[in-house]
Amino acid sequence: MNGQTKIQLMLELKNKVRMGLNQAKKDTFNSVNTMQAKMNSLKFNFAKNSKEIAAEVPMIGSALKLISNPLTFTAAGILAIGKGIDYTTKKAADFNTEFRALSNLNLDKSKKEISSLQRMVLGTAFDKGFSTTQTVAGYFDVQSTTGKFGSEVRRIVEKQGEFANLMQANFNDYIAGTAKGMANFGFGADKLDEFNRSAYATVKVGVTTFDQLAKVQSVYAGAAASNNQTFDTANKLLALFTIKTKSVDEAATLTKSMFNDLTKDTTIKAFKKVGLSIYDNNGKIKQADTLMLELNKKFAGLDKDKKVVTLKNQFSGSEGLIAMIQAATDKSGQLQSTFNSFSDTKLDMDKTMELAKNDLNYKNEILRNKLNAMEIEIGISLLPLKTKIAELKLAAIDLVNTLTLGSNGDRNKGFTYANDKYAGLLQNAPAMNEKEFQTNLAEILLDIKQTERAWKNSDDWLGKQTKAITTAYLTKKEGLFGWNKVEAYLDFLKLPSGDTYAGMLTQLTGIKDEFIKTWKIA
Image 1 (cartoon, helix red, strand yellow):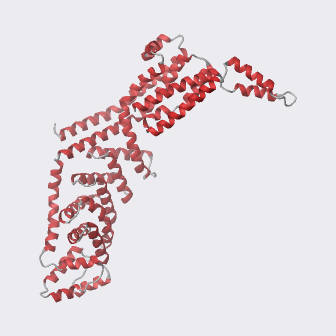
Image 2 (cartoon, rainbow, N blue to C red):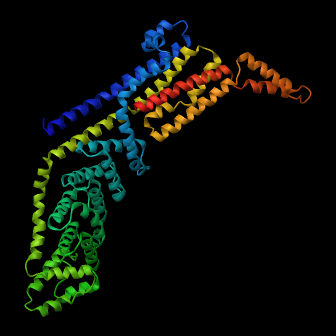
Image 3 (cartoon, helix red, strand yellow):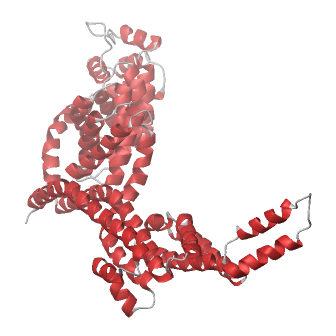
């Protein structure tokens, strides 16, 4: 099976998954809600409905017979429901964290627009086989630099990201460089193909790489654009200077200073002295390569070195401008050849891209990224279901405690208190790192220890009443009727009884075990 066939199969699978998810989620939600409803109705009637409970929730019947801790067994059955979605929902949670920076960039947008943007990012990653992490960063760089949003950003990221991958350039550096180029030269997505051909020619003719070009382009882009020079002209001059300098950074600095000096009065007057104008017939500034070739013809017509020197000395300015004039003195034809080569090389780009697309490693990387994007998309769809599973776990704990503790009111108060206090613990456990897990575990262990201590020092209902009366009796009477004695009696009764502490301790222990198991499985 070739790479294209695999991609087609994956597309079919993705469409089927997308179509089936809504129905699957609806069915599962109904099942979970039904199970919760049955638990709620059965847990209050355990004594007279034990057979019905065993039939509706078979794992409970088995647990009561086979093991001493039915809570653990019941929770294990529900964990099996959630285990299958943990992998994709974990990926979805990680993606949501990465997406947060892009979301924060769009605080003025509606929730619906943000959701649409998230789907668009995932769509780009899947359709083009990009890394989701790199895709999010690409969207961020384009929007933050150009101010564009939505479909045009998608077009830019997809076009430039694919080009970067095919040319083995840094994905995000190239997209960020493109965004800066668009901001400086003021072109839109319709010019991206020309921009890429110019970059390709710069790398092939000059002494630089795509990664280096992406980083230095912003050095000279502003100076070039301010003098009505195109990105193609600017790149052409950079390529020329990289041949004559030690590094691409030095060449970029020369290119910038050359463009800064191009329209200075001294430069304009110098061109006039040699019989040239920096303006065309329409009054627009000529492109720098055109001026260089015109000046080159002037130098080529001089038969003596003295005349060449005299002509060169008409110009003064930065090192960049002098480097331009120096290059124009060429009589070997190298200048013309370099510029011709720059134009001709652009035609080879399509062939290079086609060859790269057939590279096996390139195809495999696309497949891996497509699978990852699909898993994240599924995980995002299942996140609400995972919340439901967490709710179901708590319902199971609540039920089993009712089965094992009976209907004693004070005990029910105890485990209800524990449930309320740690309601979000099981739900959040899969997303916790080890430090967060240990912190929460230490808190519940401390709570268990303090509850054990309180239970040992507490009394049952009768003992509590006796102590309350004793406390009231020993309280010094205040006023005619001594209402403070009544208040002392009532305040003492507000303290939890031994039965309440027993319920709390049992429930806390069960939640602790479930918390550890949930985190380890996740």
